[in-house]
Amino acid sequence: MTDPRNLMPTTTGTAQIGLSVPNVTVRGPEVPRNIEALDPVFTVSGLSVFYGDYEAVRGVDMTIGNREITAMIGPSGCGKSTVLRCFNRMNDLIPGARAAGKILYHDEDLYGDHVDPIEVRRRIGMVFQKPNPFPKSIYDNIAYGPRVNGLKGKMDDIVEEALTKAALWDEVKDKIKQNALSLSGGQQQRLCIARAIAVKPDVILMDEPCSALDPIATTKIEDLMQELSRDYTIVIVTHNMQQAARVSDRTAFFTAEVDSAGVRHGRLVEFDETSRIFTNPSDKRTEDYITGRFG
Amino acid sequence: MSAQHLKTASGASRSLARSRPRYGEFAVKAVLLLAAMVSIATTVGIVAALLEPTIEFFGEVSFGEFFGSTTWGPLFNPPAFGVWPVIVATVEITLIAIVVAVPLGLAAAIYLSEYATPRIRKIFKPVLEVLAGVPTVVFGFFALTFVTPVLQDVFPFLELEAKNALSAGLLVGVMIIPIVASLSEDSMAAVPNGLREGSYALGASKMLTSVRVVVPAAFSGIVAAIILAISRAAGETMIVAIAGGFKSVFTLYPGDEMATMAAFIAQAGSGDASVGSTAYKTIFAVGSLLFIMTFAMNYVSARMVQKYREVYD
Image 1: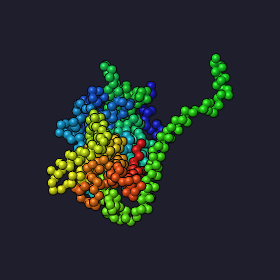
Image 2 (image 1 turned 60 degrees about the horizontal axis):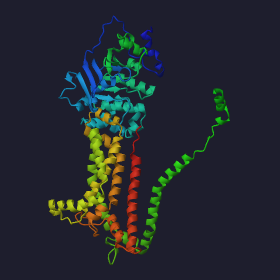
Image 3 (image 1 turned 90 degrees about the vertical axis):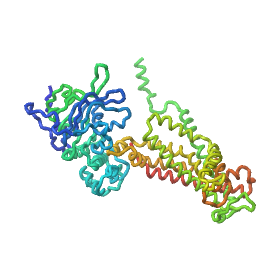
Image 4 (image 1 turned 180 degrees about the vertical axis):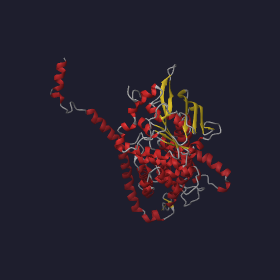
């Protein structure tokens, strides 16, 4: 049997592009486990997501810790993006989509009757798989969120601050009025991160933010995530296990299972500290996935 | 068997040259080219047909009189050839039509593209396109026999004449709503969904997303739709002939009867001018002018579409 420790990211060859040492420490089983975040931003219990009659995700329980990076990994169709899109009620926009169970955001029921999804999305920003800057200037892309939310303050300062935090300011400060579509893919994605930051959110959700980017741009985004996790809670969905191992504090492993009626559902298999998921997973399915025997 | 096959495969017939002529390919290409040529040939033909009588016209009437006078009456005795009254009427009716069609058409497009459920859209859009297929003579009579009397009753202070630019303009506007709405909707529907999601994810409402992200992103298509609609409005004949009238007095007041360029052409072309007379040649001069105006508009439209087009992959 392969020693799972051999799968540590330092051995994956991505190190050659100057990656910082991943913040994964190997802990022995004697260290007390800390599965649940102590200071949760989200507390998910019994979450199921339906598209019409189809139950895409069944019975998810997990917590998202404050100012932690939580990664959600798993094979395609396992429902990890679906769960992510519940956190800012993005699924509301899909006709027929519906969430059952409970998500507490701090102490508030995210799907409560009184909750305004627009207010939710203002607090919980999102970065998408494909960079999606608006066909406007770099400046207007950043200013869009603050403007529609009626944020106070000098717009020039807000724009500069957001771009600086997203590590993009130095690259674009001389062409701030140029169309954002003239930027490279990696720059566009950092622009989208800056755009999310500009509305001063509490949480940033990232749906495979690097899957359309080259390794160098990916490294920049990963470094940026580390930087941002000091101020923001980050949840990232990724196909890339090494990425989850490199950047996250906790990892949720999802998979798709066929139930007794022959219907596929996404299930959360294991949720734990990233170091444990990648070195000593408690579920055989997790181990199979991270060792590459499946998925 | 297999050896024979191998031999054939490795023999002389393995050459990469075409093994047999493909006449069908040539024929298809020729037919397609011919089809494409018809529209070009028609345009060239129109220009040629307009050009000669127009040149002859300017041999008989000076440029100065045509563009320098505001008295129009080529069919009167004595005739007058100051073209401004029909230009003003055309521009005015087109403006009224645009004021009607752009807000309504854009609102319909935004509704269809952003708000309507797929079910509603599936019913609504064909209905809208049927409106585009209503014969304009119907709009004309509707303007003359319904809209004008209603306006006269409700707004007596406007002192509308029985035929007037206002009613004609309103109905030309209604006529072009489907063009604005349908083409704008097409270009809004082509805006990638990722842009909408990006906007929603920043806490924008549906209305803000539509107005500040989708419409600007679809701007080139919307401009093209509006300019096509303007061209259609400027050239519209039946509505303006029936509801706008043929009187060519130089006036700006939309309550007055006024003849547009197209209305004049229809009137003079339907037998009021004898072939070869100066009045007859006036038809072609006015036609040339209208052609140049719409051509210029379409050209500007094409340039703007090019300039503002965003390329999404």
